[in-house]
Image 1 (cartoon, rainbow, N blue to C red):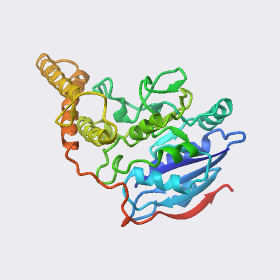
Image 2 (cartoon, rainbow, N blue to C red):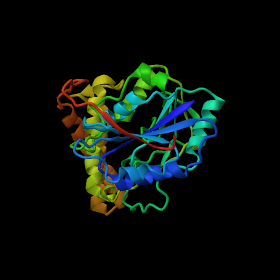
Image 3 (cartoon, helix red, strand yellow):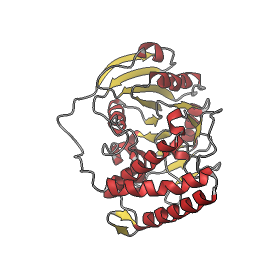
Image 4 (cartoon, rainbow, N blue to C red):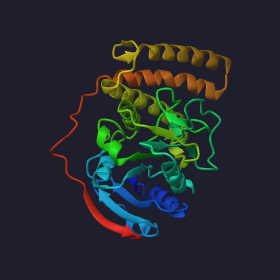
Length: 328
């Protein structure tokens, strides 16, 4: 079997180096053949010092320049040039655990799967402020669905994280590429839900997936994410992204003005809790957690008015592959 690991990047060479260093440090698989595809999503320039960054990776490395803005476009470009049996996905601000390749190989040898995923933890030693509210670890790029292996299905407590996923080529051919209306871009860097939309399509296609608690990726905790205004902005844009997502995958709930009815209730309860906690001098994490549903509701209302974009644009420039670097 062959696996290509896709690593999209945009103007973060220092983080890309950390990600690829983790690939280098990881225990290599026994028989699984691995390649790495780095997709530079900056139309203006190549990644500074890229040759030296990828030069130590012990697997063949292909470098692709995708000028169409957006993480989804970058991932689609990487998928298009890969002919591997499986495609892995991590972000440029993540690091593989040392056993990542071995866990993938062992899981696929033990039982066939259409896709695999696992938890994403903050990089060990990250300093997390006390005001960070419960239930909002996703803002820091973290996601943990427990310590028990289980199938991905409608009862799963979470979803497949795009920053720690492996999907078979056959399955991707069935479900199609990432939705370019979703996901971060240089101009809408907090836009999201591209991985959730892909996950929903995987379930709708009847794809068989497994959550592996030992398939671990570590996410770098950006200093900018440890600010309250970042949490407010994240909640707003997550709401806007959810509105775009709902155009194709509406939730089985009642909508009012294009927004799930329960979102109004959450925002109202949050506002009341915030007011009571503020007056009583309650814990900062409680106040912050109560405020965020209001920002999320505003984002949902805003997202309902975003113009639809076409799935394809013939005027977009095409991706170009600049190099094959690394072990052959």
